[in-house]
Amino acid sequence: MSAPAPPPARADILVVNSQVVRGAVGGRIASFALERIGHRVWFLPTVLLPWHPGQGRGERHVADDVTFAALVDDLIGANGLSGIGAVVSGYLGSAAQAGNIARLVTAVRKANPQALYVCDPVSGDRAGLYVAEETAAAMRDRLLPLADIATPNLFELEWMSGRSVSTEMDAISAARSLGPARVLVTSAPAMRRNSVSNLLVDEKSAIAAEHGAIADAPNGTGDLMAALFTANLLAGHPDEIALKRSAASVFELVARSVKRGARDLLISWEQAALVQPMALVSSRRVMDAPIRA
Image 1 (cartoon, helix red, strand yellow):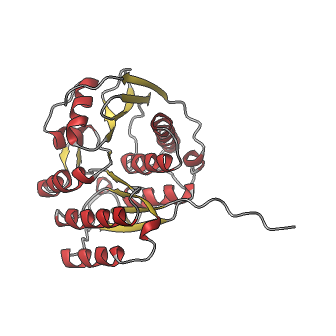
Image 2: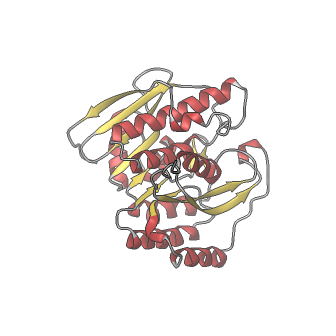
């Protein structure tokens, strides 16, 4: 009897994000999710933390700019760059890292013109910026113009666009002003009460995927959403299906983790939700005609 055929190869994905020793945020959760789905991950850490800062004070270690640039140089010259199907960037440790990430994205695209660049401009939440303003500005000015897709939360959308957002239409207009062809707002104003809306906006239309809100959700949902949406697009799913599948996985992981009383997303215990989510997420097309940004 012949050996079973190996599974079809999936594109490599380069993750550029924070690294925590304990927990499920940043590059740690993104890499686990992508590898569980079947992608080989290249992971470039931007900062090393013991845990998410919201769980207590911890030392923050950022490679100096010369060291980070040298790491990027090594990756640019590495074999296999053409096998990278997407770059997903998140939290930055310094403003200077943005320029080196831009160089890396350019090199990946040169090796594989079909590669996606997904920029998650991780910089703040309802409490305000939690990175230096110059770092947030570097994401806005250096990385968003390169991105095929951006995945800001509502605060980041407002900060990056310089606009106040209180309605779904506000969010659509602000998203179109950012520059990327597609913008996924991970905490957009929802149509239903006590709901969370993931709003995907392009030049001509917008799709909202909504599910119930869960109090005290663990950190890491934005990192996970960016990674899963990228993977679902690379799998060939249309935008709406990719959006619903990604939102369902995140919703299910949050619900199961909160039910167990966990402070972190229990991604290893509940990893089946990454592959075949069971949670129900509704979707609707908000508009089909373009509006001015």
